[in-house]
Image (cartoon, rainbow, N blue to C red; front, side, top):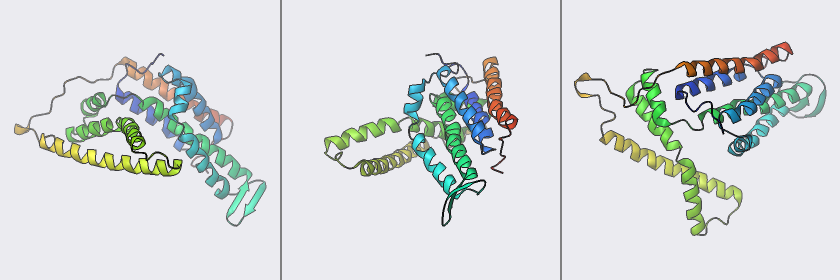
Length: 256
């Protein structure tokens, strides 16, 4: 499957995430969210993520989105025709529109992040943060270590599931099993983080370089023409939902 982002700098991907998601935080309307969501599904295969794979990776969002919509449906600002009312909960035309907008917006903000951040190499990301953004080396090294640890969560979850199955602890309800696995994963992550911090401290990552010298990097990281073209394409794609929303008179700045 083609991936137009395979050769771009990791910093370009972070810039795309910022450009594509920020406009979705400025308005609460279903038109811009729907257009942005459609653009994400159309562009995902070009970024190396097929539609089926994207849906498989983002299935928790399809549970979270309706939950956010229900609260907006029942307790949003009233407006238009009233369909249902009980104590503080009121369902009107405005609350239905806001609920739909909120559900679509959760997907429109989260799915581009999944597509763009899927295969970022932590080492290349650290090189870009240090050499292009000139961030402090201590912060960069910590960020690289943290991002690399995130990639191990899936493997840890699989190993814990196999260990619990071997011990006969997997025959519980799904909710109890999920809660127990999540707590175990949290404990494992905290222990690993503590050991990693101790190891990095012992190897001198937190100490200044003797003589006031600058830290060197094994690989050069820079932005090339491809990165700037990709950023330009991202700005254009991020502008389309806003333009469509404004033209259709659906734009609601911060929900107003």
